[in-house]
Image 1 (cartoon, helix red, strand yellow):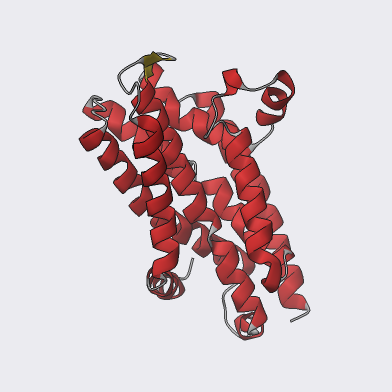
Image 2: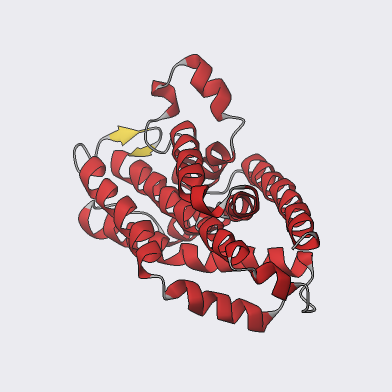
Length: 243
């Protein structure tokens, strides 16, 4: 991984205030609106407020992680890939840099959403549970960082917002971030288990009820990250080869 390239990428993305505001503001508003009624009511071994807080944290993490798609599409449009071919930055280093960048960008929405949950929704967890929930939510960004890379190299620059927006909406829906799975029709529940969003939510919520991360969910999530990462590397190679 090229640290200089990563540093430049972080600085460049942080200057895009619209991306940061969207990834922080939307899940925060949804948390305060949806999570306030019946916030202390018990639900699936925890409280409604805690359950929704984690869901909105994952929602913000997904938004931040997949946000790389837009920047990649812009890079393609201005011919940045042609410049990358002249540098020692190989495909693996490029993908790793984008993934690490996504993990950095996920931190602000997670921090704000969980702070709001504790301050305004009275979510009370032990220090160990807070740490595991935050870690699980942070790890959940991995497959979506790779997915953003793929979208950026598959979709055309002029259609990137529509493609990523639709896919993001469907993943959030089937991942149970807006509607709990037990309230979905059976067919939707079956489809949900085949999406990375479902396993991301499972990883992040497990500490609320079990006090630890779900090993199976973590492995499935990592498998999604590796699989999508390999596809992302292949798309980078194909795109730079014809740039």
